[in-house]
Every structure is written in C-alpha cells, then in structure tokens.
Image 1: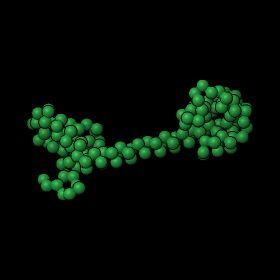
Image 2: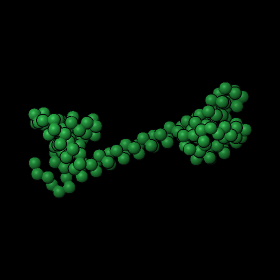
Image 3: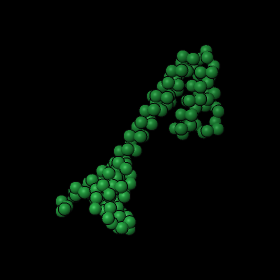
Amino acid sequence: MRRKKNQLTFQENKFLNEYLKSGSGLKALSIAYPKSERWTQNTKYSQVHKLLNNPLISIRIKEHNDAEREAIKNSTILNQRKLIESALMILENTQNNPQQYAHAINVLKLLYQQQGMMPKTDNNTTVNIINNNSIENISNFLDL
C-alpha cells in the first residue's frame, strides 16, 4: 500500500494502535501484519525495530506517553489534595482525640516529605503543625 505524505498506512496505524494497547512490538506486528507469523524471528525483530523507528509512529508513541504521564501527574496531585484536605478536616474536628489527631499529623508530615517541603528526619515541622492552631496557615502553605 502506498503511503501518503506524513500519513501512516493502514497496517502501520494498526501496528501503532496494537502497540499502544499491549506494549509488545511482536504482538502488534502479528496483529497488524498477519503474514508475519511465517517470518523468521530475526525478520520479525527487524520489522518491529523499523516500525518503532518510523518518525510518524515514534512521534505518536511519544504523544501518547506524554498524555498518560500528564494524566497520572494530575491524578496524583488531585489525590494528594484530597488527602491533605481530609487530614486538615480531621485536625479541625479531632483536636480532643489525640490518636486521630496524631494520624492526621502523620498524613500531613508524609505529604510534606513527598512534596519536598520537609526533610525526612526533621520533626520540627510536625511540632509546628501541632502547636499551630491556625489550620488556614497549613492550607495556604500547601497551596490548597
């Protein structure tokens, strides 16, 4: 099949879609190019290598991976915000329950560490959070 300029052939596009689904070049090759089942293993590897180095395919794979990374990053940020908001709510509502209050402090401490806002061995931040009755300051610091 002839290739139009800057377009993938039907089989190349099928290979790309199957590769994005499975992550396996050989599996994508066998689905997009059924006759490849009769090829030698070296020929299959060579064809997969050629397809993955096709600029049109490699750009689409990079775009797909970038989009997935961004979605994961956004999901992680959202989950961290939910954890922080939950911990702050527990802090507000459980100051009379030392055990629940300590759990909320630990969650905040871990999130601070995760975001690089506090060294893992620094206990001063936890003390500052416990001694600081202004939950708003914590919320502002965490950019909620």
